[in-house]
Image (tube, rainbow, N blue to C red; front, top):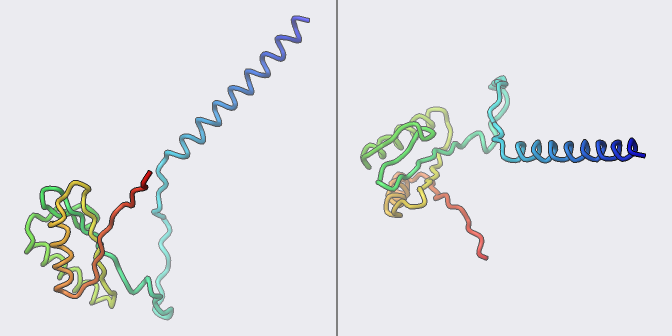
Length: 141
């Protein structure tokens, strides 16, 4: 009889270990970052007409709490509003040359004063460039 108890105990332990390993596996999958970048470079065609999303590009401008602005996918910092205006104009000219419409999305840091974000929106409004302000919706509860 002692041999049977040992068999039940070891098979139950293996099942528990498998459960733990699967839980860890799914946990790592859930918290891992999924990359959207692809190594595949699609062929370009002049014969295929551009679709609506292809004719528009969004330029993101980040707003820091100290009034500085992040541009070029947050790789460059702009300290002055006049420099920011020249950046927006240069981007619009670059995209107009490619016949692509420009749209600006402002992403302000949660503790950045609103006046800095609205400066960007007002600049875009003066230049007649559509602009939007990104926010995160909070659940009330």
